[in-house]
Image (cartoon, rainbow, N blue to C red; front, side, top):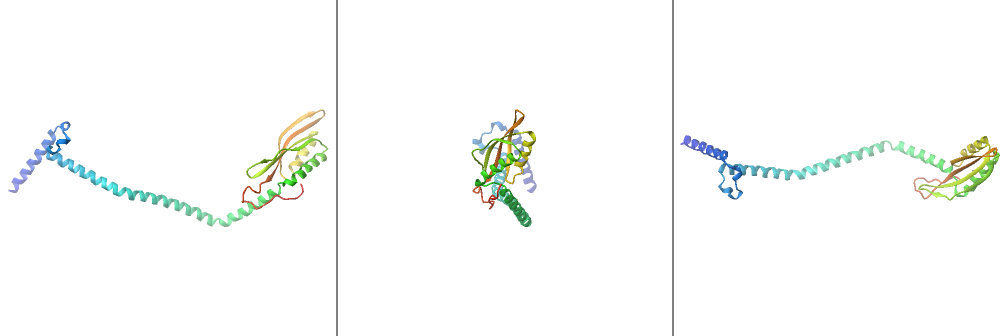
Amino acid sequence: MRLRSVTRLRATAGEQWRQLRELQWRELDIKEAGNWPAGLQVMIAAALLLASFWGAQWLLASSPREVHQRLMVQEQQALQRFETLSYQAVNLPAMKRQMSELQARMQRVLEMLPSDAEVPALLDAISDAAREQQLDIDSLKLRPAVEREFYIEQPFDIQVRGDFHQIASFLARVAAMPRIVTLHDFILTPVEDRLRLSMLAKTYRYREDAGPGVDAKPGRGKS
């Protein structure tokens, strides 16, 4: 009896396999799926079951995967912030010393900038330097001030006459003044047996409304 059942199952499996091999796949109609061979129905059912199982696994795992990735990004950001804060904490004394040095240097620079009231005195000092070098002063006049982000630029025109050595000594005196003066746009023109120097000079005033970073004001000493 048992041998007969096994023989019958083998015959049934062989018959279903033969039907699958002889099946005209292009002629299958989804509307007649109930009449398809049992082996084909079993294969399709198994494929659908596997696809459903895989889809359920993917849906269930996608949310934890996103959470895990987000937590990893947050962990990296926290580690970077911890490293930055640790570095700052370790180097805080050195950074404070550097800040004090920078503030002292800034104070010294600000003391070299003339105040608004000192600009006329600076022009007088430039005139005195020209006369000491026996130069003839043709022109020395202010231009309108130009406001920059952190400072006010005060340009003025200078025109003097003399020989080459006198002009060179005059420029050296102006560049060495205790107040910051920069020289621009030099033009030397021969005039008879002398030279005429025309140039643009600039001095600078700190804008006290530029920001709270420096609590310093320009000095009020004489130019």
